[in-house]
Length: 311
Image 1 (cartoon, rainbow, N blue to C red):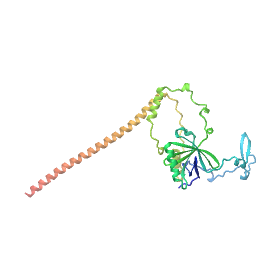
Image 2 (image 1 turned 180 degrees about the vertical axis):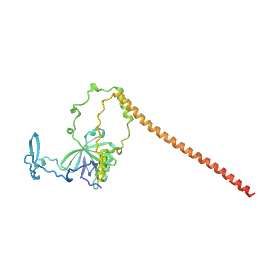
Image 3 (image 1 turned 180 degrees about the horizontal axis):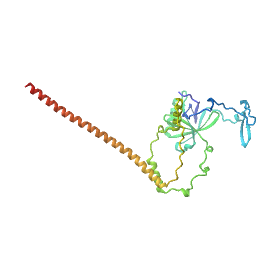
Image 4 (image 1 turned 45 degrees about the vertical axis):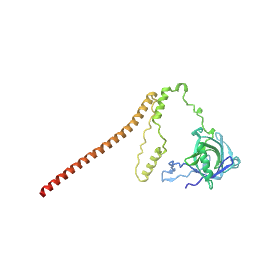
């Protein structure tokens, strides 16, 4: 069982529910170390003063905030400590909101909240109430000296907690400067209808196991081959050039036709396979019956010949 990375209590109103925090994800990024190419010795990172070229001892390092090029305000640890949020052990729910009101862009990192010692009943009560109301609790919590905004919800038998971005951390789309011109890019009703038809033809139920990190799989497979002493192909594929923007209606029509062909092709092959199975069964039954009849005939002949010889 994974160790809890934090323990405390959910607090709402006058209710406190002891909980333990577990990470809900396990990152599977392929990580590499830097080595000396001459003898494959791992490289050490050193903090060096670029002016003197000398290594700076750890106890001489200070924190500085750059306010203009090469101008820093040095901040002491005690000054930061004085501003730290109060290190409480509670997840303080401030509001309950509807799930659909939270744009997914605000979500950051997911966690599971397990019940603490003796908290099974109040934990189950909160879970049931949140599941029935389909509400999400918006709360604040201090983890590793940093105050986090979090969303708590009921999901598959457990309370989940997702850290959230604060509103000023999300870049508004208006700052992109590359949004389409509404007057020039407005789609016609026919184009919208066809796009919706294409979306409908590609719609399915979400199955997370269907999607894999194919690049990571390929990298791990290549590493395994090299570890076993096999040579690997180092020819990189040519980068594909982006296609020109096509005629929108023609592209939509071609996409819908292709999607329909794929769907009907799958149905046709299933029907063909069923018909083929039925035909095979009928054929295999036919000879069996015929052979049964011939067996009976030959038995009759055999009997007759025996009775003649007895006479």
